[in-house]
Image 1 (cartoon, one colour):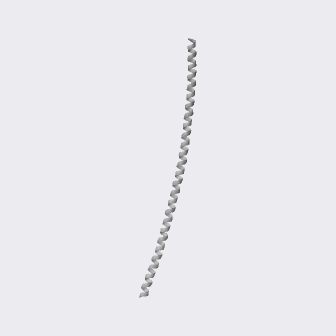
Image 2 (spheres, rainbow, N blue to C red):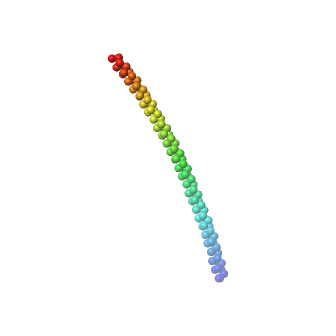
Image 3 (spheres, helix red, strand yellow):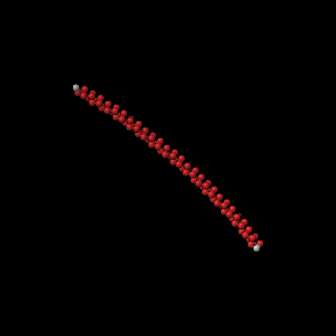
Length: 99
């Protein structure tokens, strides 16, 4: 009887050890999966950040080009206005000389 009890306890201990190893393996696999998921999320975030930075740089470049175009157009308009003022002043002076 005593041998039977010892054998039963040994078998129970062995099965608990085997179960514990399975639990450890499952926990290890879960931890690895979580680490892989975290790494993938980090990679996706880094890629999205890089894309956002590229889009921001492109938008800034476009805005700079628009400002440059506006400045050039304003300069051209001022030059044309100056030419027109000069022309009209010359006409007025010529008119004054005729009188």
